[in-house]
Amino acid sequence: MNCLRLSDLEGKEVINLVDGVRLGVIGEADMVIDIHSGEIQSIILPRRNTLFSLWMDRQHMIIPWQAIKKIGNEVVIVELDHTIPNLTRYPG
Image 1: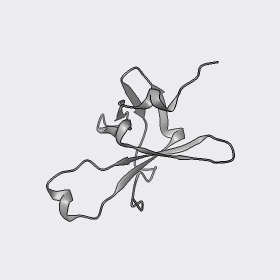
Image 2: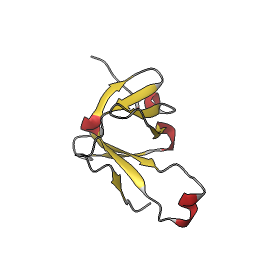
Image 3: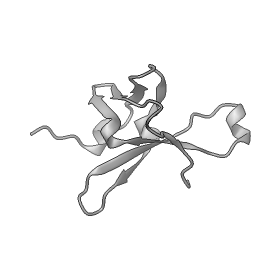
């Protein structure tokens, strides 16, 4: 059985398979975990800071766990397209 610790994800870049965009780094993320089953439901990545984003509401990208396709040594590959609502305001 392959095991993955939460600390194993830290520092990995998240890359979207659909368009190749770098979405963020897991070390800067939060996770939503089902308290009954202990399963990860989603990863919440903060939006990258830009000069323009200083005047906008803070938004986060919510990546459903089922959108994760591969976890490698340095990156996590996810598949997010227009059918998955991935940019959501999340109270921080």
